[in-house]
Amino acid sequence: MTALTLHGRNALGTGGLDVVVEHGRIGALTPVADPGDGAPWIGPGLIDLQVNGHRDGDANAIVPDPAHIIAMAASLAEHGVTRFLPTVITASADDMVARIRAVAAAVRTSAATSRAVAGIHVEGPSLSEQDGPRGVHPLAHIRPPSLAELQSWLDEAPGLLRVVTLSPHHPGSVEATRFLVAHGVRVAVGHTHASDAEIAAVVDAGATLSTHLGNGAHAVLPRHPNYLWTQLAEPRLAAGVIADGHHLPDATLATMIAAKRDHGLFLVSDAVATPAALRDGGVSTVGGGVHLADDGALRHLSTGFLAGSVQTLDVGVATVARLTGSLATAMRLATAAPAAVLDDGPHWRPGARADVLLFDWRPGDTRITPLEVHIAGELIQTTTGAPASGGIA
Image (cartoon, rainbow, N blue to C red; front, side, top):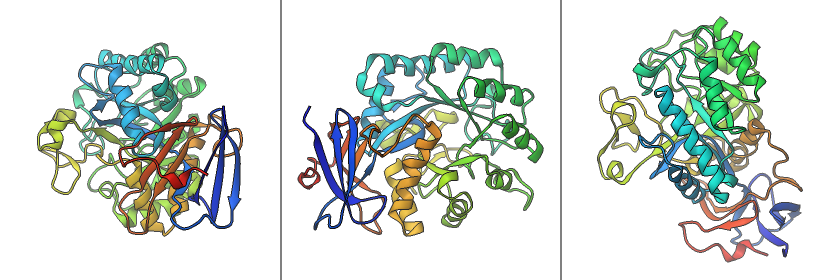
């Protein structure tokens, strides 16, 4: 295979960058003093650790089907996402297993999907039963953790279970955390009303993540202490945050970024399926009925609670770039930071898998615009038009 050199402005630093791709891997990263007028930005592909669905692909479809996961991989790539975790949410035990089984089948049967799916995130069913922290997860299926149920997930998708979100207030949460960590699964605190002591107990047992910190919470909390401050202050918890312009106000997001810094925070989309009927003003069955509100947020019909996002990480990167004044910071939070959570090997250096994104972006843009998306060295056509001719040296 002939080596390919991709060229652009360095999205993670200054100046330009030449990226040599050989046999699906990065052969070299070479700084270039002057990238040239009109060169696109270049950086690693985006990594999303919480995707419930995207457009017509749904990891929580009523009738689970590997085709949904394959569709998610294809449509997310158009937005610059080169790796992601399909996220299965709270449902009956049988339904959750069926959805996990569908992800595993998609990975087995589709080479392209296998390259994009980094594993599975299971969000629930051991979440808070209280209104607010529960979000739109169905109350009827909230239940304490069961080691037998956790084992069933491992059995259905060997090697694919990567993250499990739970609320530490449930009896058995510490034992469940130890069990999952012993099987190589990251445990996240989320959708919780747990006390400081309950959160500390699962962290001591090996929990290392917070799921969409600041969301899945009561509308009104004690000034202090509360479970948000506890997680924000805990250095052993890396926090996922949704930077879609709806889930977190600017001041809240800026505070979280400042408190957690690059190594303790990463962007997620929490994207959900948006079939044509929903996009045309209809109602989704998620959480008992949600609609696309006038402000562009997906909200529950009766409570107004947010029910995931219709935005993807291309929006999150632009949001953080606007807020911090740094594209490099925003890109790190959507690439290097989630890659560190996955811990699957080298990232964005010689020998790493060649997941490369060339994109347009200017200060003030509401999203980055992918031009070329390379997954394991393979060029993926985007919906924004033909690949930029200036991107290949």
